[in-house]
Image (cartoon, rainbow, N blue to C red; front, side, top):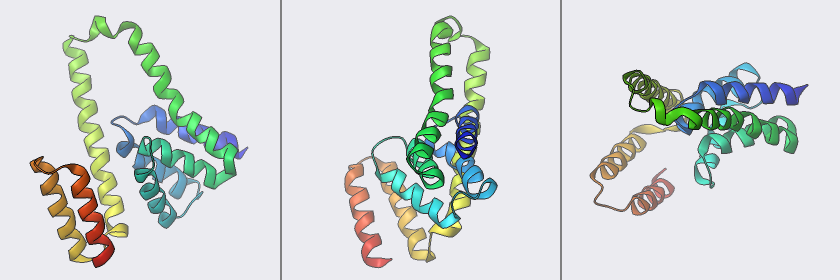
Length: 172
């Protein structure tokens, strides 16, 4: 029965989230931490960190790990299948007629609304995780500085990430 619960939870997440992996994180947190208790908030934060640095989409990695944590390898498999299946079905279906509606004002309005909702979901992830993951004003300063450097686009992102990681290791 747990496999069905995992599959349906991640099927809902995959079906009702738009805007990429970061927009899915609040929904994953709601299901795995708050609703089902498959992992603690602390483990969820660790899952996000691991999902961010491993290859692949963050939400897919987080879903796989959450499913694995709840029910081993089969749990990871059904969580992955559940979170991917809605996007696959939607993409295949939309590809059949997207060219006909692509220039429609209604289509453009819907896409604009989806962008706003996705941005709100990503910001809610920041709000939910900020208190548990950031320790002190030094980390806040590092965040602001890193954000400013990314915004300039004059420094290669890999160098910014490397420097922020080194600062974090030595100062935090």
